[in-house]
Length: 308
Image 1 (cartoon, one colour):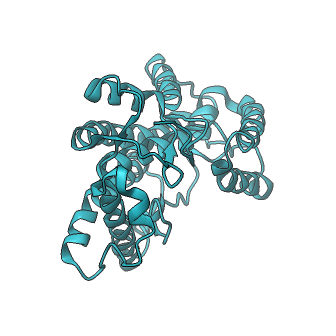
Image 2: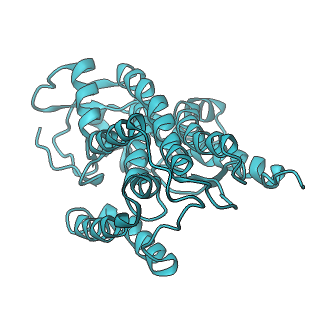
């Protein structure tokens, strides 16, 4: 028997290094935006002099607030899947991180490749739920620390250059615990660490959607079996409906539709379909649903519509 092939380590390390660079670059920009008083945001945006010099070591050092936080959240998410796969003897690769020159995130996330059949529904459930819960456990303290490092700023007279992030229920709760009720005309100026945690909550919610091959799809199939196909079809309709609420859902929904068209809406069966889930895992499935609800926001990104 050959030992399991966990993927080419040099490729995985190269992608991780590249993702560290792209997320630190984005993180440096986030820190500059955070350090800029919101009342002068329009002046900074229209300045003829580039506000940030990429050759400044402090720019990259401050960018680590965001990059290390988001890499920790994404990395723990994927390592949760990876370790669960090893526990059940499933052939799996180590995580692959995806660098991307995106202005807000600097990454498209990370993934592992499962290259053998899942032995039973218990293993499928544990593999599916381990990632989102591991990432959520890291995102929670990062959110509270990031909010504590944030500050409340007065909104400028012209807030047209500001971006508004949708606030999941858990984010609102954490912000209220740290800052209380923010007065009219003011807003929380998020520290890059808080933004990384916000992105981590959103990524957790996206993965927990009970659709086909997503983590939530694994959980749904482990709980409901073949009936999960109907749930997948309904949730695809929900995803399409979300695009009418916010254009920020369009790219994700297109990827979902492509996945369903190419792979089908049915989750592949496990080797043993007869072993049922125990009561403890059914409770964990309910916990995963709660995590999805508290991490979800119907409009993740949009123009600022608040009034000072």
